[in-house]
Length: 459
Image 1 (spheres, rainbow, N blue to C red):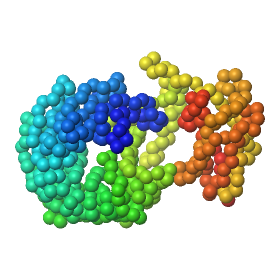
Image 2: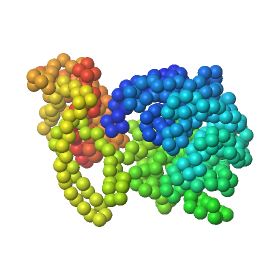
Image 3: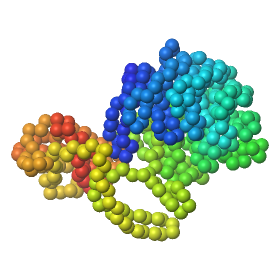
Image 4: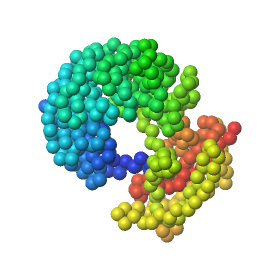
C-alpha cells in the first residue's frame, strides 16, 4: 500500500510463492495494516483529516467487512490477545477508539492525550499502552474495563512503544530526546531513561535484547532486557549496521527483525541498499545481503521451521503445489538424526486447478559452463506444451539472469534464430551459479512458472 500514490488497494500475496494473488479495496489513503491474533480480520488504517478511520477485511472471503470513521490523523492499531477488542489511535483527534471485534461495532472513544502516536497491548497486565508524542505521557487503558488506569510522565517526542511478548517491561522510544523510556507493566512505573543514538524511531526484540533503530545513525543500540528491575545501571551496547545512516528511509514497518536462529537479527539499511545479519555477542554483523540493488526499507522474516507445539511434538505448516506422493527428508543437527518418510497429498476440491504452462523450454547450448568476464550465448528451444510443436514468432520472450544469491541480474528479450529456437547473450561479471528464468506475457507465462536453467561460471 502506498497512500502517496493514491492507491486504495491492499495486495494479497502468497508468502511462499510470492506472486500477487488479488487486490482488495482498502479504503482511502491506506497507511497501516494489522492482522489480529487469530488471523480472522485484517485491519487497515486510513489516514484523513476529516474522514480518517479503519477498514476491516475478512481474510477468509478476502472482502470488505466493515468501515469505521474513528477520527483525524494517522492511525495505529492494536488488539487484546483474546481478539475481543481492537484499539485505533487518532493522532490529530487525540483519542483512542475501541471496537468490539465480534460484533464489529464501535464501543467508545477515550481521550488519550496530545498526539497519540503508538499503541502496544500487554498480555500480562491486560492493558493497552498509548504513547503520546505531544505531551510525552504513556497512558494505560484497561483491556477489560476500557478506561484509563494509569498515566506515566516521560517526555514530549515519543514516537514508538513496544512490549515484548509475555514481558514485564515496556519500551517507549523518544525521537526528540534520543532516549528509550523503560517502564514496568506490573506497577505502571517508569524505571529508566536510556540514552541511545540520534533520532531513534523503532524498537524490536529478541529473547535477550531490545534493538533500537536510529534514523540518523548507522549504529543499532542493544539494551539487555534481564535485570531491568534490579540493576541501577542498564546494560547497553551497540554495533554498526552499515556504512552510512539510513536517513530519509523512515518506514511504518520494522527495519529490524529477529532472524530464524535464536539471538540474531536482520537489519535493513536503505542508504547502503543492504540487509545486514547480526548475531548477538559479535562486534559487527556477520554478513550482508543485497536487495537487487534496491533500497530495503523494511524486513520481515517468514519462518517455516518446526516448532514444539506440545510436549515432544514439533509442527509446521506447508503448502504443497499439487496432489501426489512426496518423499520427506528430515535432518536434525544435534543430536544427529536423519530420517525419510512418505506422505500422500490428495486433491483439494475447494482449490481451483492451476492452469498448465503453455510452453516448454529446453537448453540447446552444449556448454553449461561459462567464463567470468567473457560473453556467453545461451540457445533454447521453445515448444508448445501440448503439441510439442516449435513455438515461433514470440516477440515477448523475456529472460531474467541472476547470480545467486541475487547480487547481480540482467533482463532482456530473447531473439529468435528460427524454428522455435531463441538465444540470449550476457557476460557473467564473476564466477558463481547463474539462474536463467523465462516469461511470455502474451502466453500468460510468468518467471516463476517454468523451471530455471542453471549455468556455472568459472574463472
